[in-house]
Length: 81
Ligand code: SF4
Ligand code: SF4
Image (tube, rainbow, N blue to C red; front, side, top):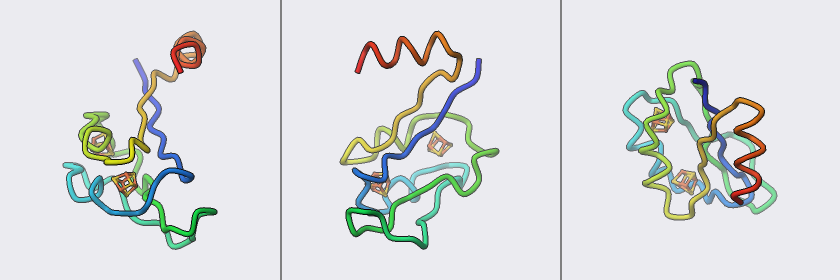
């Protein structure tokens, strides 16, 4: 099964906590400011992500979500939101 890792730039405040806890060093701070005026985290190395969800748990603003990438799962996810 495949997964999709998403960071919401409108929520992320660029605190860096997720970057610090990621065991695979996937995440980095972007060099472009968001519409909210922060430098958000992003997946600099998505190929290394193991979808452990530690970053999701750590984020104080719940900016990170991991969803199943299959179409039916995406529909299910939307229904749950
Ligand atoms: S899910 Fe795990 S491996 Fe992937 S970015 Fe988050 S902490 Fe890193
Ligand atoms: S922990 Fe959350 S708010 Fe902080 S940089 Fe990561 S995604 Fe952004």
